[in-house]
Image (cartoon, rainbow, N blue to C red; front, side):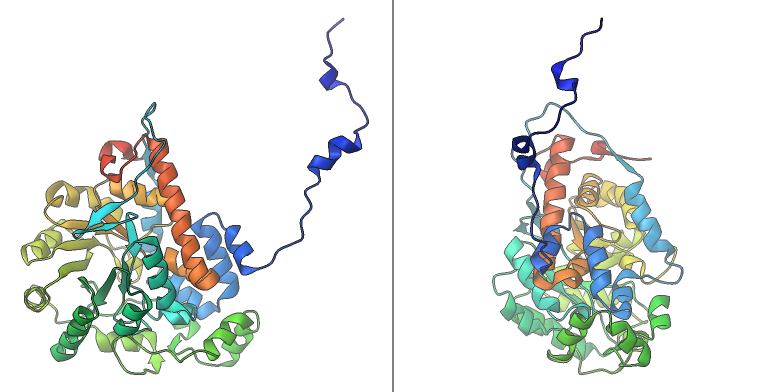
Length: 408
């Protein structure tokens, strides 16, 4: 006769056994509870989509034409395999890095984003203050909806950078440069992949305008997101960091600002008038990376503008190894586009990036919950970075090498 353990014999459950299992709690639908339940950037994106009208959400979420570039950028991160080391002491992890001469508590900063208060009314103020609290850089866009001076006042102890679109009117560009310097920005990031606006078809289909127009379509859409419209209508109208009030389509505004005549000689001019760190954003080939460094760039951002300009553009993560092989140590190598997790950031660092920038990931958090949502974005990424490093067997960012990752 086979032995039957007592633990396998059926019995009527006792009340004392059931009591510890009863964990009924009052439902909590508050914003803080909603954000706590978000464990990934994808979770924040889902909340953002529910709470934000279609036009501003799609402006953030979308890319150019068939959105092939954005899809490929994300697939590049998915096609990586981590190669962990075992039996290392990883009790304490240091996620800090030195970027452009100063320490950042985390190996990422907030990228420049346009029209940010249209996504959520706290906009650049939420982003800059969350970055200040986290000890990471914040980059204000030329197309930001808060002035250089207001951001400096909102985050006086933060490390604020300014992103510049060079206009054909160099006097207006110079005025912005001088304002950025006076406000304490130590880094100027000039974007060079915008000779003309990309074909962002979601914006065209949504009839995206600045400011959003109250049409029958938008009113119906707003009926599902009343909190967004309440915030939008009860706060100061959209104003820009670098231009007067504007009313028109996004594409028209962009094309009125971008300079299709921009050349490497303009970088020489910038290097002459700007005394701080000069970073060139929008590098998509090794040859151009070499050239901008030769023209005085202290840093480069491998970027295809988040897939929002040229569809089928080079993928920054794929370009990174060859750029790092030649220019590592000669300039600060940064990367954006496609980053949706702390693991993505660790992979980029292992392949040779000195620093990374987040755009959409930050905006998903902003749309999901304002300043608290941005804080949650940073916390999620920080936790994922630390955990990934520990599982790889490293405790410092500088210990990451190409041996830790492999393209499948």
